[in-house]
Amino acid sequence: MAGNAGMMTGPGTNTYLLGEGAIAVIDPGPDDAHHLASILAAAGGPIHWVLVTHTHRDHSPLAAELARRSGAQLIGLSPPKDGRQDETFVPHHRPADTERLILGDVEVLAIHTPGHASNCVCYFVERERLLITGDHVLEGVSPVILPPDGNMSDYLNSLDKLLAFDFEYIAPGHGDLMDRGKGVVQALRAHRLAREAKVLRSIPKLNEATLDSLTPLVYDDVPPDRHAWARLTLEAHLIKLVHEGRVLERRGRWSLCSPSEA
Ligand SMILES: [Zn+2]
Picture 1 (cartoon, rainbow, N blue to C red):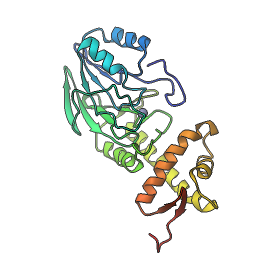
Picture 2 (cartoon, helix red, strand yellow):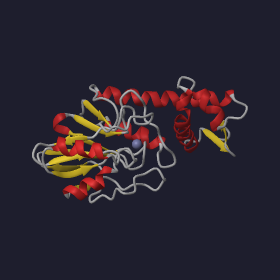
Picture 3 (cartoon, rainbow, N blue to C red):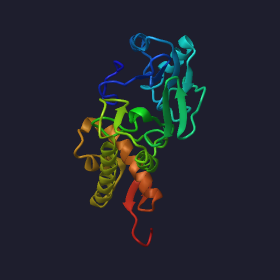
Picture 4 (cartoon, rainbow, N blue to C red):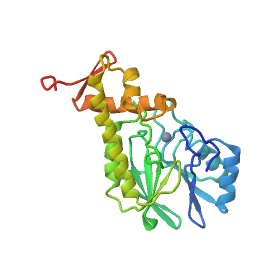
């Protein structure tokens, strides 16, 4: 775990090392010399691959330095251009959806899971029934969806997609390993849909439903110091509802579609 604890990183970013002879590193983490030294010490052997789940700046920046030192192949999807990404990450290989990656004595499936960010990939270690999720699934908190690169419809579809795979354990990007992984994904899905229902209930309660007025109402169960982030996920919910024809937006004010407008 990197030493970057914080509101958005929980106890810190988790880095995973796979394999015994040749090592694969997943999510090397932020550009931090102490964490780099920890990874090199823990590897205890040559690092041949560095995989990233996505390119937010708490996950991928050490990849370039590890590749420079070890000649490792960088695997992941390129950073989207939304100003929130680690643009130093230039992959040598962009895995196709559900591509099987042979990493020495370990095999993983790369599963595309857009939503939290558009370039999110989960890595499934089938033999261990272990799913490495980055920020798609976290322990104890639900991931922020960051529009416009992040997308709530995609996020929910990506949760559904995971349920087709036979995993038991989830290794998240932040927080502890979880068992009963399917239940965790189903609970996360239910949480998002409950929040969406609360958005729909809250809009008619306000004279002017704006992001500013909706956030404290929709997130009245969340501490105010998290509302700036919650507002982004709220916006992602609203964009989804507009696309579905359930909500209208005019000049930053949101209203429910009447049946005639739908
Ligand atoms: Zn992230």
